[in-house]
Every structure is written in structure tokens, then in C-alpha cells.
Length: 217
Ligand SMILES: C[S@@+](CC[C@H](N)C(=O)[O-])C[C@H]1O[C@@H](n2cnc3c(N)ncnc32)[C@H](O)[C@@H]1O
Image (cartoon, rainbow, N blue to C red; front, side):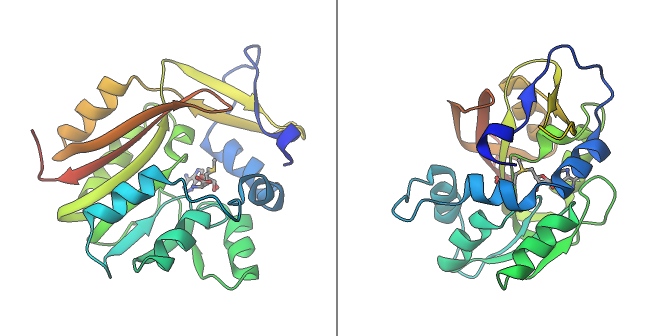
């Protein structure tokens, strides 16, 4: 996908999109997505990753869900963290292999997550998990984090669901969530909010938030 081909909201689209249709879309666009999202050489504006780094000891072990091209994993590895890179799309696993990074195929909905880890990272991924499935996915993520470990999440903020259509016709499922619901759902699993920020991106509003297991307040 080039920038002009990124998924676009299509109010008229029916609820035919799903996580599998989304993954099928990503299978066809890893190179273009990577090019569109590649870090700028002089850009070091990564507030969420900086917060994550502050919350962990050097050498901490992370699971990254939906690594995509692996740009965030690169940033974290360069700063002393150990990242297990995973993605549900083989295209991204191969993209990372092509630049010498080891990534594994892992579907967050159906595959064992392993662990316990010092932290789990899921940035711009779980909006693609169907609304009714996300609570169970959150529960499995919480189980995969050790006590005192952290969870970094970026999710679409809002209400309802939408279907975004790529230029090749792929249908990307997107669920939007009210901030309060996300924070309450994770609190119920023992994940207390440490830090959060909302920002308007190209596709809409994103909530980025860092949680610590056992740090409820
Ligand atoms: C918008 S991209 C985000 C990639 C990267 N985390 C980033 O922030 O640029 C969404 C990613 O979620 C992955 N994904 C979607 N559904 C998934 C699933 N069920 N299990 C694992 N990864 C999934 C896609 O393959 C894609 O890499």
C-alpha cells in the first residue's frame, strides 16, 4: 500500500470485514505499508516507546504482537530490550526476515502467546480484532505478563465499528472503543493505567496507553 492506497473509511461497506479479511489485506501490502511507516532518519519522537522504556529494566523480555515491519522492535532493541517479534501476516514475517530480523507468525486470536513476559506491546493492531473477541484476547495478554510487567497498547478511540477499503479492494475490520471502556476492561484484569495519550492520526483518534500488572489505583 502506498500512502494514497492506505485503507479508507467506507461508511457504505457492510459488516463483511473480519480479522481474517484484514490479515488477507496485509498479506498483500507489507512492502508498501513498511515504506509508508518507515521511521524518518532524524525523527526520535516516540513518546509511547519512551514511556515503555522508562517502565522496564534493560534486558527485559517483550512480546510484540503485530510487529508489522518491525520498526518499533528495532527502536526497543537498540535501547537494550529483548523483543519477540510476531505478526499474524506471513508477509510481515518475510519482510523482517528480508532485513535480517527474526519474526514469527503468531495470530493473537488463536495462537498461544507464551510467557510470562516483562511486557507485551500491541501498537495499532487490536483495532482489527472483532469487538466481541477483544475481551478474551485482553485476558490472554494479561495472563502472558508477569506480575509487575507492562502492557503498551495503541487502539482506535471512539464508538462502533468501521470497514476500511484498501485500493485493491481488501476489507480491513476496525473496532473503535471508548477510552473508559478499555481502561475498565484492563483494570478488571489487574492492569492499572500508568500513562496515556490520545492523538488524531490520519485514520482518526488513537488512544495509546501503558498499563502495569498489579498497579491498580
Ligand atoms: C496497522 S498494522 C500495525 C503494525 C505495527 N505494529 C505498527 O504500529 O506500524 C496492523 C498489524 O496487525 C497485524 N494483525 C492483524 N490481525 C492480527 C492478528 N489476529 N494476530 C496478529 N497480528 C495481527 C497485521 O498483520 C499488521 O501487521
